[in-house]
Image (cartoon, rainbow, N blue to C red):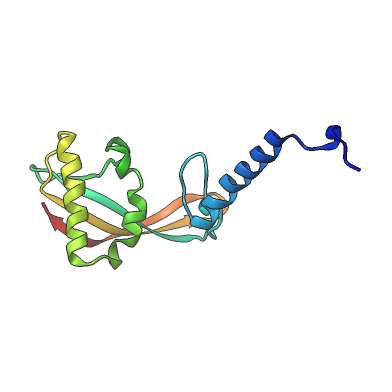
Length: 144
């Protein structure tokens, strides 16, 4: 027979259930909302050759600069995911994304004439994680 002293406190049960949901839901949903993570950083094999994306804007003087997503409003901080999916977007959606980035940059005082997206290929020296060579090729350009 279970006595009252043997029962697990209700607050402990509720805490455990909430904790497990917050641990499992982001992993299943592949969300990365700090402090909860989908563990994607640790779920990819690291190889000597890595591919990625780089987004830049061209100002009125023709100087090309990396888009500072970290200094844009918080809604733009997840733009790496957008960059990874950009090639699958329709032409209209690509234009809308470029226009949104250009608008956000202009609101921060940057002059924007064009948005360029580059496909990057980096070769690392394994064991040292030192970049040996990086190549970039222009994948998309959006006039703004």
